[in-house]
Image (tube, rainbow over all chains, first blue to last red; front, top):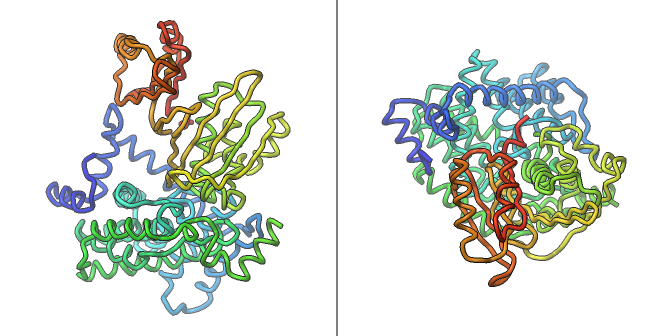
Length: 291
Length: 212
């Protein structure tokens, strides 16, 4: 492995005067005998396509999950965005609607890309495709952004966790927001160090978030958390680009995330035994679906 | 992959597919036991559909997973699903016991997140076999020299041993070598290995089963 921490990743990019994504492409290519970077890039372009199709499907089709609880919210956001002046502006609501679209397709057992997980699959496409429209980004820019996000996810997976059952929702939605914050910062022309600050700011905002899915589904509160985490990712990137720095270094935030994850009780780690999952309404829903 | 969960759907499908590949045939009878988070949320996360989908040979992005349990019934695969409160090292754990004729095989798989999968137990032996690796399971009798002859035969076939683990039921009893290789291992090598003294059976697993 070329890097185990965000600091190593950033230092490598600084030394070589390249983007974080260039380091990640090199790392991924080293896993193959022929070290073919084009092949690695091509594989990632496929992931981007699946993400794009999920967002398009979620915005176009009248989706309903098998439980009947999820579907249609992405379209509501899209409609609101077209017919109103949203408080947070059109760009942000576009991102929220796209994030919701992918998360709704996921709840309907449709094809998505885990980023880093399926429950958190909306954040990255929400950020990327909203900015693609806004800035007229190229396919190659977006694929690079995915590699940067992947590098962040890899470091978090190796030093903390990306599993809700192990580390709570902070491990899923939190990681997704950190990954997307780095990807967006890079797309905006930020430095690798600014990417690290953006990750830290995003992770800190979601530190301690518990995993408490209603009825054991990946619907409530997962889908809306994809949207709100998209807003956190974009605002964290803006803060880092403005020059704000995380006083606690990114790797220490990840280390804290690991410790916090270990101390989250099992009832709040994807067991539906606590939190929102045991509210009165959630219990009624569970009874209705599973008897 | 298809949703709704990378650990509880995609990872679970991979464990099912690994189990099927290692078993060598589509099982006629399957017992599935969910532990930890899997036990609490498998219905909502479609973990049961995913494991059965894997056992039917489906990949994690195969839309047919959604209907796998009905399909299993149609093709004559009997499925028994239960949950256990027993503590496991990882919260996302599943045990799969497969039967076909007089052949049975048991694996315990773990899904650590993001769609990764690994087997932590094979027929009662402790292992750590990742889905994204190539490995050999060499069942043998615990006798001196067996490991050396196996390693020698692999070397003569130009296969480098990346990592290796050995576990045994008791001194001089049944034992298992888990050998991870850098490159895919040709399936036919199992025949040559099985001809070695004290080697009882060999299973080859290659990560390429997840490619399409």
